[in-house]
Length: 241
Image (cartoon, rainbow, N blue to C red; front, side, top):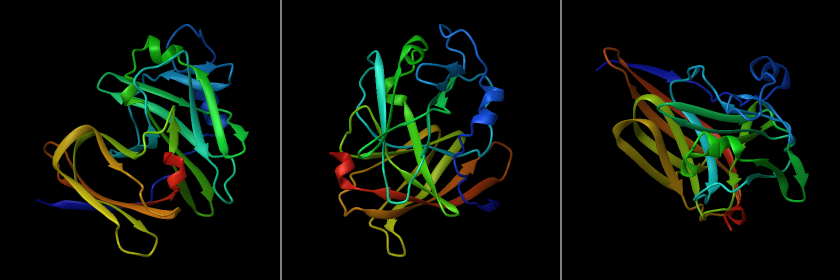
């Protein structure tokens, strides 16, 4: 089988107000449409356009313990040295829906940032609580540094969630201190579409780590793509307590 080798850096998640304004219009807040909502100010709803961009996306680095949605929900983002104005996207993807919340104004507190909002759209659109995902990063230099999002309450472990509309086989998934050997390694040899979830207990000292993964994307009547990427993320075991 022929493979095309793709070596690409993960794009910085950008939540810019001006681009969002064009695709996030005002509207009726009692619908589930993706519109500008307030208070608090954010873009939220069900997006109708098809997914675009990479065929394999990292959609969540989070710790979460959500069995159902109450009337409100809070996300928390830890503060890291040198980090200002973290960027966050909350989403849920399925075969027949694409929920997203972004372009939001976070509140600063002593240990990081937080955002609380009404879960009307989540409940009205019947988004499964166990399928809500979030990814956040700080722009430090030329590369984003990711941090785990706390969705509701912590679970004592991290979830790394990928999504693809194609069948994907992960030959390598490993976590390593920067410049050192892997301290955790696993794989998903059976190809599947939709979400692929990896969990990690984070039972190591606080610091900056790398996530490295190698995946083969299989498409019908086309050569497979081989993707190899590394991302940098911050870890602190206190965030899991």
